[in-house]
Length: 267
Image 1 (cartoon, rainbow, N blue to C red):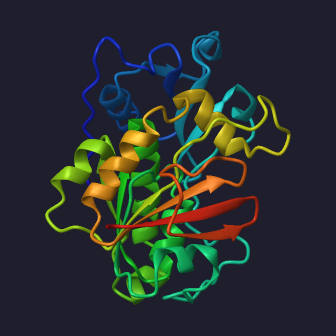
Image 2: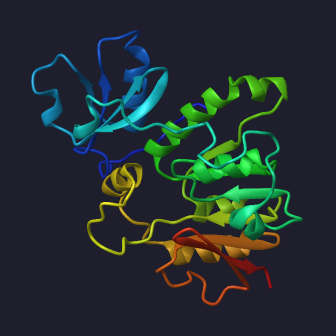
């Protein structure tokens, strides 16, 4: 797995919001190295009032790198889940059916997920047998993804089939897409849209924490334009069903549960 190297400035958006938490188990060195890479403090759980400085923490628990908020400090935390979600096939390659597969296209082979986030759509795309490259601009999420892909590489079925986890690039996809040596068949976008209501009991914990830590994607339109320029054949945009299409009227659209996949063909 690649070594994560992040260049932060005095405008580090995580300062005051995020720390790496060492809970007095195992070697402290990886915790210190991660804190140095993210340019955030290292907190130690037996220090007085350690939890009164930042709202979010990264820590290794149960062999996984996890993201915690104050509520999750005693509940385990959130990590990149490498197992299939409920209803997804566990075989490899999984059948290419459902709205997502239809949107990606029957003849598509190479996919770039330019907004990887927690990686659940990425891993579903990977399990369907596509050649996948992931891009994530948040160094926090990239660290969580790198840990998830590390665990995935150790899975029995991955090793038995001699597969490799998806490749991961850290940086702004608007810039990185322009550097791709070969245009992919499809670029997949799942940007964060403003919620329909400011507070929703139905919102997943993982998404509310991510939004609180990172904010909304304010450059969705710029990312869409960069994706349409860089793709070989199509761009797929996942959006909530209440949102206006990101790129105007799509060429195709496939409805899922409370969401849709808008497809834009390269002209």
